[in-house]
Length: 193
Image (cartoon, rainbow, N blue to C red; front, side, top):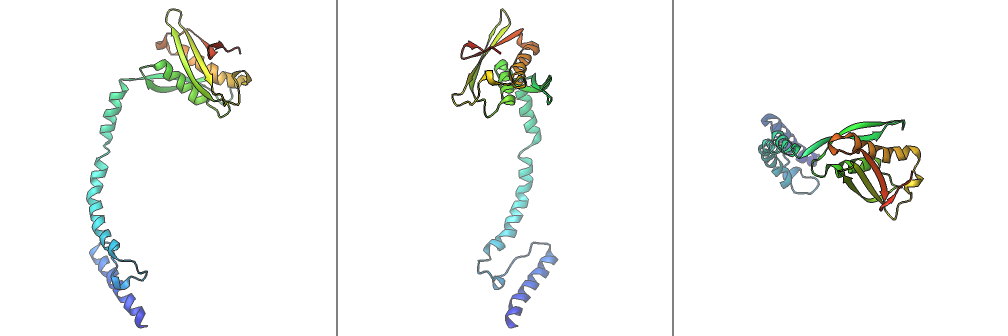
């Protein structure tokens, strides 16, 4: 019984004092049953007051206005394009507005389409886009990874629409590209579909 009072009374006094002062309760070494020092608990209220002082600074540091200003600066270097992708029924291509870098926007548009149609069994190692300004013809040269399980000719009609149809429509329907037609090659050889 004596041992219970030894631990219970300091705990009760600590809780009562904490309730009156509004601060977080602290433990006393006499109530430390686990044997670990009470220093971290004692430092916690001081740390929490430091945290309270830091909290306004932390909320002010990532200022939303500053981020918007940064976005506005980069918006001058960005171009909004219609990137086409196949619908859920695989019947038609639907546009999706995407902002890309104004520099090399044709390559960026092709990259966006390829990200949307990427699959684990058709692995691309890279691509290159050449546009003949005189004729308005774009050539998209695709390179499959040597580890790719599938080839372009093995794609289903839906997969062909998703890949080649999306690329063709994205490049021809964005008027700022001045592209009238698109042909596809694999390492320089025409892809026959």
